[in-house]
Amino acid sequence: AQSVAQPEDQVNVAEGNPLTVKCTYSVSGNPYLFWYVQYPNRGLQFLLKYITGDNLVKGSYGFEAEFNKSQTSFHLKKPSALVSDSALYFCAGGATNKLIFGTGTLLAVQP
Amino acid sequence: EAEVAQSPRYKITEKSQAVAFWCDPISGHATLYWYRQILGQGPELLVQFQDESVVDDSQLPKDRFSAERLKGVDSTLKIQPAELGDSAMYLCASSSRDRVEGNEQFFGPGTRLTVL
Image (cartoon, rainbow over all chains, first blue to last red; front, side, top):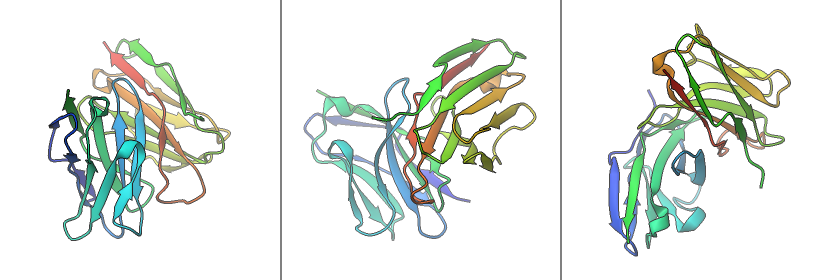
C-alpha cells in the first residue's frame, strides 16, 4: 500500500534560521511528490512538486525540496524562516494523479 | 487569479439530516476531486471525476454519500443522513487535463461541517 509519512507533528524554528520539514514516502513506481501549505480555515495551497528531472525543486515563497530516491524522502526546506511561514504543511505523493497525503506538520516560527 | 469556489463555507446540521456541498472548479479543469479532512489529519480522497465520469470512488461511503458532476463542470456532494462522525472539512480540488498525471491540484477554501 502506498503511504506518505511526516514524522514530526510540529517544528519550531526562530525567524531567520533555516527550516526543514520532513517527509518520507512509500510509492510503487516513479513517484509524483508535492508540498502544500494550509492556513487556518483555508484550503491547501500548492508550494512545489517533483515529477522527474532535477532532484532539487524550487517552489513558491522561497521554499525548496530535495528528492532523495535512496532514502525515499522529499524534505521541504527554506534557508531563512519568516513568521508568516507559520502554517500547517502537507506532503503528498502518488504514482498516478491520486494523491496520498501525510498527516501534516505544524510549522511555528518564533520572532 | 482563477480559484476553486465552494459553498457554503460552514454548515451546522443535526444528525440524520441531509446536507449538500457545492464546488465550482477552475474553468477548463477536467478533473475534480472531493476530499474529507478530519481535524488533525491529512485530506482523504472521497471521489474523483474526469469530466462527468467518476474514475475513483473507492473511499466514498456509498450508503450515505453521493456525488455528481452532471455537465462536467460544477459538482455536488451530498450526505444523507448525516452522522456525528461526518464532522470534518470537505475540500474540493481541480486539476487541468494538460498532463493526466503529476498535475498539481488547486483547492477551494473548503466547507466545514459540524454534525450535532
